[in-house]
Amino acid sequence: MTPSKIRPLEGIRVIELGQLLAGPFSGTMLAYFGAEVIKVEPPGGDPIRGWRVVKDGASLWYRSLGRNKKSVTLDLKSEKGRELVLQLFDSADVVVENFRPGAMESWGLGPDVAKKRNPGLIYARISGYGQTGPYSEKPGYASVTEGFGGFRYINGEPGKAPVRPNISLGDTVSAIHAALGVTLAIIAREKSGEGQVVDVALYESIFNLMEGIVPEYDGGGVVREPSGTTITGIVPTNTYPCRDGKFVVIGGNGDSIFKRLMIAAGRPDMSENPEMTDNSGRLKHEDEIDEALGEWCKTLLAKEVIDTLEEARVPVGPIYSVEDMMEDPHYQARGMFERVEIDGKPLQIPAIMPLLEGTPGRTDWPGGDIGSHNKEILGGLLDLSEEDMDKLRSEGVIG
Image (cartoon, rainbow, N blue to C red; front, side, top):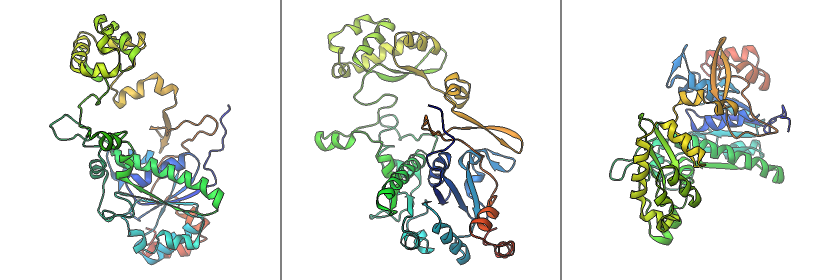
């Protein structure tokens, strides 16, 4: 199929409010697949513009996160700023916000007000604990909700403090849930003509990743515990150190795969052991199997382990850093990096998945300067004159 220049969300206008990661990354996904995303920032800009690695006064992360968005500065604490936001709502298909529950209502910008003006509006809300329930008003960053959602409990070494991945997983997963919710609401609106609220809680997005822990506990009384580098109840699947200090991940838990794995690792006795022919049997010999694989890996370089097991058709792979990713030919062949220019200087940013064969997403421009689209949106879409904008600027409404 020849890719089309038309993307699936073209013609959809999104107003993005909020800051940092969950709301903005949801907006990034929608913009990548064609939506017109108008990012409303305070006059000083989204704080994430100054986070992590900053070059030439701007966060390199924001160059990726702010791609394809039109930045407009409006002070939501001012009456004039809020009125302009409502005017933006009037022509929008979608609102995405990630303020604390009740904040939008306190500004007169909640969904009840917005939908009276625009009944077809889809209003996506991302918060720590959701818009309802006894914890809804609690502050909820990703780090906290990853614990509350169960993710932290099952991660790390038994008996030690739970570990945190060095990313804001709860924010990113919630952003993906919000983007999914928005697209489902768009489909529903085509049938009903009505918009709706999409209520995304960070902890619930994490909870959605928890596989079978609920039925296992309710039906079997089993609490899944942290398991270090392996996973409970599936053998063998683990991470092993090699002779060169690198690590490999081996997934040999399929019955036929296990046989090929143990033959390749020099343990044909285990491959033919009748007590290890299926997962339930291997589970009883988990330590023995892990020890055998660990000893074998220690004698070889990581590349030698990978080459040997790939030849035996056993799932195996390295532990990659970002440097490894950017040098890998498979990442390159799959188009995982996109090149943009910042003041004439090249910068690579990640592509956004999934890859759609006929209507793929793309990056049109990197995250730009604060208020870079004020004239286009406030002057063009909302029909403000230069004099109007100068007055609002002098009053601090648009910065």
